[in-house]
Length: 162
Image (cartoon, rainbow, N blue to C red; front, side, top):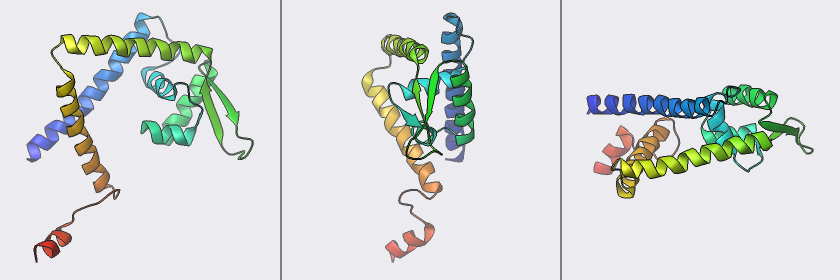
């Protein structure tokens, strides 16, 4: 079990890095050089919404300090517009500029192309749904390890058995 678990963790890490490389290749092929792959993914996740950095962190599962840095860089490069909340001056809301919307649309086209190509590669919706179920179970397990959600401890299993 331990080896299978560690192999799964390594595969998840490797796939995430490869996915970021796919985004980098897409940016390079369209000659976009002023944003990196992680920033492009954050931008895509913002989409048409207006969010605070905190909301973006929760939505995208990014580290807060990384999101703040990346939001700053994307704002400097014209992809995001920042505005302080009129109700809470500590809170900054971000939304995509026209340049950001154009890149978000380009990424959407890439995902649509991938959806077609993934089926050509022999992965059907049922296979992907099963994979997603398994990944959600792993995510749930890790959240339990962090203290979020129900957790079955050794002590509670002994009580249940008694």
